[in-house]
Image (cartoon, rainbow, N blue to C red; front, side):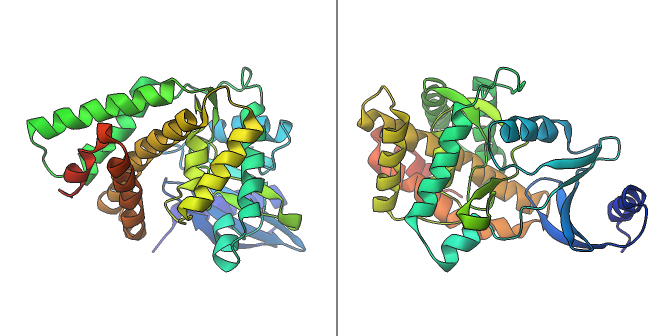
Length: 313
């Protein structure tokens, strides 16, 4: 089967290197239309991003990568860009993800390191980075994916119940400290480098939003489950290091509700990836995401209706 995009990428690299002395292999793809290829040449290695211009934009990736690198975050450096074709040549941060590391040898200190990186990211001045707000419309549209893709037809009463919950969760997000939000700060988007330094990837959808969003992405990850005691320890670690001017119990509730918003969105996205895009591998992660939501529905009466509604799926 002809892969026109791969052929075009190969031609682009031949022109860039001025020869054909390289090996190109698929490094990964993700939940978008982007693909990543590892380029090996002599003793050097690079990552080539294939982002079809009709589907994805390279400009946000470039802009936000420069913002993060300038702030001391180990995001991949951009070596070359062809925006017309949708190709980027990037620094290779290796192939060991944070997820791989934890599955082989779990260490809570690694999570503290990831939180330290996150705190640094949140501290950076974003005024010149031209990052959009994580506003009411976007928060609500994301949760609407649950209805559009994950749930069957709802009764009018169930729809009203969901919209009430959506409003509660949106208000929770908007009433927190607004900071840089990676939007997918989890174990597959952190790369473990030398000396356990962390590289950060897949940040092109960043927004300005709630300070608990990336934290909940990390600690209530769709791909790796922490024990409740571990989550509590790491929450306390973040809370202490950021000197938040709210009670810890209130912070914990903000975190919990932010998690519900994210996980309702993820349920819709994972089902859409299967139905629309044929990426069925994400379905195996749905039970853990549902577990996260049901645990919160048991804890908070305001969202207890989610127990009955999610059982419809």
